[in-house]
Length: 365
Image (tube, rainbow, N blue to C red):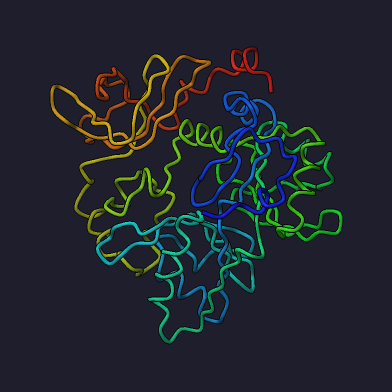
C-alpha cells in the first residue's frame, strides 16, 4: 500500500503512528483516537482522505455507459451532483461501491484505493465499442476531509467561501489561487465536506485548516465514527458474496433507471420478496473486544455474523455491525455475540453517540 499524498509531505504532522487503511497508508491517530472522535462529533476534525481514489470518465457515451454499469441513476443526474452506487457482476453480487459525480464534461468516480484496481479492470472489461475514456487520477488528485458542527466556521477562517450546498454536491472553488473541488457529504444531518485538490498543495491546506481551528483526526477515529454511523465498508461489511438488498443500502439502488449489469437479480429479489439477511447494528455494555466473523446466537441458533466492531471507552460500550436473519434482527432483541450479550439496534446507532457532554469532559478536543 502506498503513502497518501499528505503522508508523502507529512514531516511535522504530529501523527503518533501510521497504518494501512482502505488501501493506503495514512495517519492512525494523533495521540487519543477517542478525543479525535469527539472533535468530529462536537467540534471540528480535519483528516486525510488520500485513501480515496478518483477515476475520470470522458467521451460521448460516458453517461449512457456508466448508467448501464451501476445500480443508481446516472442518466438523470444533474451537473454538479453525485450518487452512491454498487458495481455488480451478472449474478447480482457486489464487485465494489462508489460515488459518481457528474462534472459536466466528465464523470468523476470516487472509491477506496483498495478497490480501484478491481473497478478499473471491470470498467475495461465492459468498454467495447463505446466512446468512453477511463483515467486513473491518482497522480493528479488527493483530498482532505473536514467534519463537525464547527466545520463551516473553520473553512471560512481558512479562506473558503462556503455557500449552501446539497448532499453530494461537488462545487469548483479557488482557494488562495489553488483550484479545488468542495464536496458536501451525503448525510444531510451532518456538517461534513471533502476538499479535492492537487497533491502538491495538500500540506499547505492541511496546515491552514489546522491553524483555523481544525483538530487533526486519524483513521482510528474515522473508523469509530464510521461504525457508529452505521456506514458499511466494502471488503469488510460488504463482500462480493453479499446481495444489494442484504446490505440495507437503499440509497444505492434505483428501480426505474433501466437495465444494468446484475439488474435482473436485483429486480427479481424486489418483486419476489425480501432477502433472508439484513445488515444492522448491535450494542453491548462494556468496552469489549469483538472480532469480525464472530457468530451471532439467538435461542441457541446461529443467526448471523459480525463484520465490524468498535469500543467506546469513554462510554463503556461496544458498537458492532453485521448481518442477522431478518426475523431475529428486530431492534431491542437481545442476542449473543460469541460470549458477549448485546442488543439489536437501528442504524445509525444513536444510543452509542449521545455522549457529547461526557466525551468532551473526558476527552476535550
